[in-house]
Each structure stands twice: as structure tokens, then as C-alpha cells.
Image (tube, rainbow, N blue to C red; front, side, top):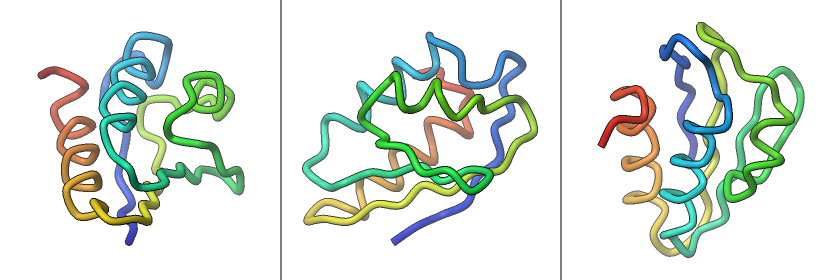
Length: 86
């Protein structure tokens, strides 16, 4: 399953939000990939996420595949919508 989201926080996906995203993604067994601008990154790797260069206003797709994919996708989309605030 997948969902496309827009990054709305001012600083984009720099180290702090990428770390928060990876920490949340790593709680799940499912494989999590991020697709943006023709590139695909492992959603559980901070270096992969930073390599995408996601900036404010960019759309990207979260792809989740596995036993807990519903909860994982919901959690990650909510995290982005709340601009990485718990």
C-alpha cells in the first residue's frame, strides 16, 4: 500500500525530521520505501532519506509492504502531517 504526501515543514527533510521518521519507521516489521523525483530510498535509513534532498512543498510517496503496513503507513503519514511533532 502507498500514499503520496506533501512535505510541509519549513526545513524539509533535514537531519532532525529524517531521524524522527526513521525512528518511527523502524518500529514496524514492514518494508518502507520513499519514492521522490524518480528515486527510491529505504525509509528506515537516515542516509537514504537525506539523499533524496526532500524540501518543503515536495510530494513523495510512502510505500509500505508487510504484516503491519496499515499501522505503519498511518503512523508515518500522520507524522508528516504534524510536521514531525509528537
